[in-house]
Length: 216
Ligand SMILES: [Zn+2]
Image (cartoon, rainbow, N blue to C red; front, side, top):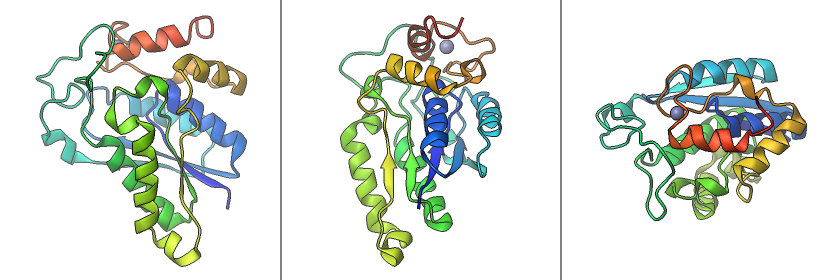
């Protein structure tokens, strides 16, 4: 098998991952989540990216449970998205609790059902303030997926959590994406969810820095 399902947010990292997947895998699916995110507009971008990339299927999953969780600036309207850089020694206020564990579990359910042996996730070296983006989380999630997988049990093969950007910066990703021809003008990163993007939130800043000289 040489198949992958890519977690696609509509941002520059997951778009690059999708284009890399198209280069390196025979069959590519994309999966996006409507979880009550403030920047829900990203799903519009995700849909267009999936369509341009020509995936087998773009699965959009509704996970409404997150709308009732308080305290994260990405899902709780009463908490503001900060301007400026991420804090150094603690998870940012934009952390969505257990988001990647839930997303990987749901993607793994599709992987099991569709017999897909890789799950792609675009976490990278600058994401480490987020607990569920750290390498040890990815390794543990992969172990849990394989322990619970029908595909693993029946076919004696492993499902891989494919996270090729773990050792890369956002700039490295942008340079790779340039080579791959990723249409960055069709990606969206702003956590405030405005159109045009606010230009001041942490992701807007990181994106601008990473795409310097690549996207006008
Ligand atoms: Zn922004």
